[in-house]
View 1 (tube, helix red, strand yellow):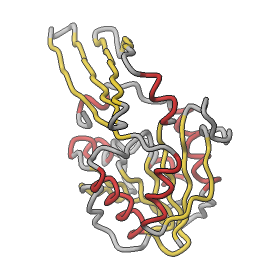
View 2: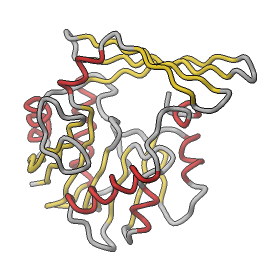
View 3: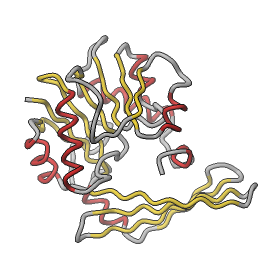
Length: 234
């Protein structure tokens, strides 16, 4: 899911990315020269903007393919690694985890991810966890969405939500008409409600200090598009 086919997914525009980075800089109160870990950085969509803002950026991702794409632009430290075992010491002023890149594992490993985030933060450092609104996710069950990636590539997303486990299964089909090939993949995400996520964060020494419903600073609510959680290391 997170290799070549990820780039064929519906990704935000450059304008949206710039707005997201402005939100990150503002809510995390980041200053030039501070160190930010972009956890699950992918092809570096946010990393490059943050580096251009004068920050020291470390990008970690498990996809060798996407990191090769990210490294085409210089000036950022990219590391291939597992988010359950981040290969860093506590040197980060902030950690960002964006575009619903959390909840991929079982309960123990999802908690391990949060523990690893806490372990690389300096005291007083902050993390930003960007997640789909778990209340809105329920409404996606059994939905299907077609879109054109290009004139010759068609994509289909089919969603299942399992309320007993809180998991969403995102089935993707990519059809390349020019080569008559079909690629299929599935992404499984465990969605935690606010109280659940807050308890998990507090268990690893991270205190929630703010929640937002989108990158325009709107408050989190049932109808919000996202659940953006800001937490500080105690």
